[in-house]
Image (tube, rainbow, N blue to C red; front, side, top):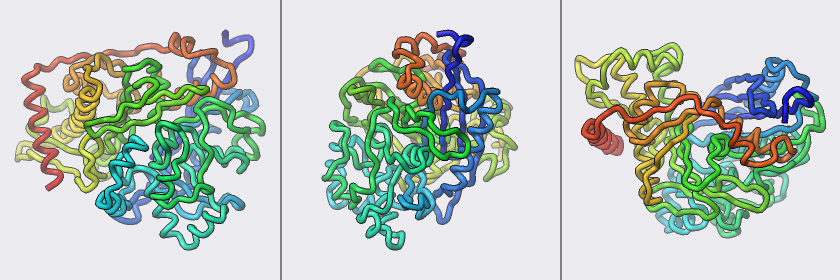
Length: 499
C-alpha cells in the first residue's frame, strides 16, 4: 500500500500515568504528528495516588489537537482510532450525567494493602491466582473498585441499581469518545482487574462475589482489534470515526514490538518497567512470582503472556528531579551518571511504592545504601539507573526459570530506552542482546496497528512484521564475575528494604 494515492491515517491515543500522548501514524507506520500533555499527580495520603479525570481528559483533547496540527492533516482524514492506557487505574462515573464520583485511583496506589492482606489471611490467594493468573495485590483494579463502593457515599446502592459504570482508562475514553454509547473494555485490560477468568475471558461470578462488585457496573469484554463504536460529540474530533483498537499499555507495546511468536519478549521503560513474554495460545502459571495475563485476542484466538512489573523505573528519575533536585530534566541523568566510573558502592532500590515481581512486598520502601564521604550526585544517578536495570534482571531470572529456557533477545521501548548507559547496564546484567527499534513509542504504535488491522489499513501480522526496523543493539561488556558481585550487593540491598 503506498502513501501517495490514498493516505490512511490512524490516531493512536496513549493515556499514560503522568501524561497523555497522541500520534498520527500513516500506513507505512511512520509517525507524522506527536503531542504529549502532562497532568497533575494527586497524593492525598501516604501511598495514595489519584488522577483528576477532567484534567486527564483535557490532556487527551490537547494531545489529539497537537498531533493533528503537527501532522498537517485534517481530523476528517483519520480512518481509525486506537487506544492504549495505564492499565489498572480505575474510574467510577454516573451513566446518566457522565460525571465521575471520585478521582481515578491509580495503579500505583497502595490504599487497599490492608484489604489484600485480609483476603490472603482468609485463604483466598491461591484460588484468585488460579482463576486470574494474578496475585492479591493493591496494584490491581478489583480491590480499588471495592474501596470506591465502600467509601464513596451511596456508591454501592447506585452501582447495584445500574446507575454507575466502572472502567479502566480504555473503557473511560471509549465512553467519552462515543458520548456514552459504548461501555466496553478489551480483554487485556479486563485480565488486570482480578475479576476476569483468564481461561474463559469472561467476568467470573466467583470473583465478583469475592470482591463484592455488581456485574451491572462492569463493561463488556471485547477483543483487541474490532470496531467498538464511533466518535460522537467529542470536541477534538468529528463524528463517525471508528474506535477500532484497544489494549493495555504493556500488551500494546508487546504487539507494537512485533513479538507475535511464542518466546519473544519486550521491556517497556516508562513510569514503571514492564517485561512481557509471549507464551502462545495457553497461559503459563508462574512458580516464581510472575503474572499470567492475556496478551491480546484477535478474532477468536487469544494469545497469553508472562509478565513481571517493577512499579518504579522512570519515576525514580522523576523523583531525583522533583524530589531531590539532582537534575533539572530527566535526560540529564545519563550525563550525571557518566561523570563517575562506577556506582562507588552506592545502591538504590527504587521501592518508592513497594516492590513488584518477583518480590511482591507492598510494604517495602525505597533505600539508598553504601554512602560514604566520597559519594556524590554522580554515584546516586548511576545507582538509580542500575537499580532500574537490577529490578528487570530479577524479573527476567524468574521468567526464564518458569520457561526453562534462556532469553536470547530482549526488545526495549519507552522513554528511558533512549538512555544509552541504562541499556548497556541492562545488557551487562541480563547477558542477552538488547534490541531497540527505530520506533520507541511502541505502546501507542501497538494500539494504532490493532485499529488499522480492524479497518483494513494493514492486512495481517506478517505485513506488520515486515515494517518493523532496528535502531540499535547492545551486548554484554562486563565480566561474569563483575555481574555476580553486583547482583550479590543488590540482593543485600533488597533485603534491607523489608526491615
